Length: 272
Image (cartoon, rainbow, N blue to C red; front, side, top):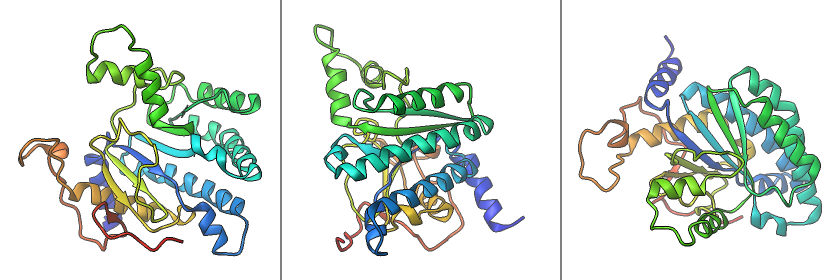
């Protein structure tokens, strides 16, 4: 049995319920550094999405949430925004059938009232086509703002008793998704920046944060594997004292490797 297969089998056992979230950053800078338009970076980023979705199942990740387009991204040049919307549409059209065959359910979270009717229709078709898939949940955040989502949930509390965390989580759930996703276990941000950028703020309350200088178009299975390794190297106490609490209390021992990722406490990279 190969070392890689052994590692994957171990991670599959240990991480089968992980919720991983990724801020897919660096597409534009990746393209500009190669003398290409920013849209070329977004196109290359779609291939990184495909690689990541395919590899995630190998490591037992149950939910993967990708930050594709923030509510603030509407401020970008109109040509870039239109190119991104075309990429969302083409990706969902091309991948929905394969996702359904492989047990991957697609859910798109975020506002839809500012998307084109054609894109909304493609989203609805992809969600309907994969609705019965139960092996893996792929959530794609489009026109998404965590602060806006929290404000909308708080607005629905008017006149009610003080909510519990669980009841507020249900209010916070995307209306198109119908039920709250589990809290995020591991958040990865590519591209060297070190901030959450208004992404899943409530759900990331106890998430482990991993930052990498790798630009999103270059992100692959090896990076994903190292991020899961890093997750298991950490001890998660959730406010309690150190103790043997399984995955929620401490990391599992894994074969040593040179880390590709930087933890949240490492020094910042040069901006570029």
